[in-house]
Image 1 (cartoon, rainbow, N blue to C red):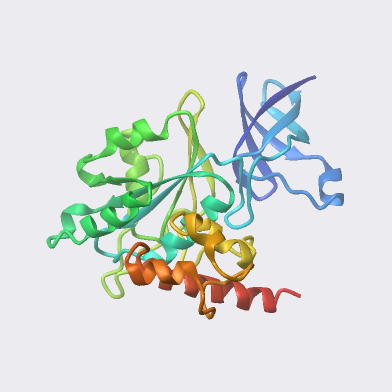
Image 2: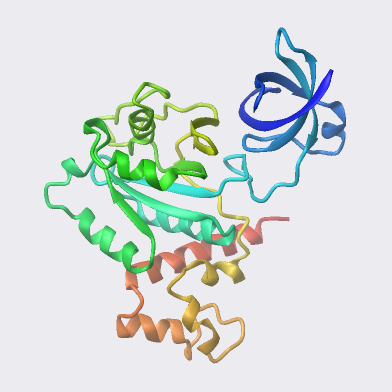
Length: 296
């Protein structure tokens, strides 16, 4: 029996698939983790004890300290988020995008925005979205996954990271991942004609290795995205364009919503901060405030 280190790349019930330099092992976690109310999650770096090399059976002995832990979806040690929107069918959900970007900023994780299905947007409205977020310093890529458009550039941006793909169902995450691997890795779904919402095809979180030290996490589609880990008082720091002006507000702890002498609101009026982004900030703030009320 020997101890080796690896990544949890898949979790099915209480079984964990751990990828190591010696191959993949099917593992279970020691009972003491349950007593300590700790559960291993996909992305965890773990130390395992190999019990049977032939059948590749092992036990998780230790979970290494996590740099990042998402509570929902459950993912650890992600270094880059890839937020996928479709230009049409379904329409871009910018409120969801801003929630996701805020959470990535809170965890100090890099972000990429992918505008997929650009061929469906005949009016090219996606160019406006691209312009808004590029000005904020975000990397924005245009893709047409089913025709391999923009895939090589996306691959370059993923290198050396543990990447989590996120976005509503139907935006084309699975199609993008399959295009990156040039083979069917995940099941592709269709958008329901009735309500133009995606049918969720991904049921389990899994890490796929593209290259050495480069992974993709495919996660179930979201109709909501849990950002309750951000204290409402910290939300303004998660909007990158707010940061230079926060200290100039008259009141310490300014919420930038009801206060009169607020530098953020002044910058919105001057057009330096997007009014749409500001209004979405207000919505997210109120949502966090409501959640904090019902927390206990």
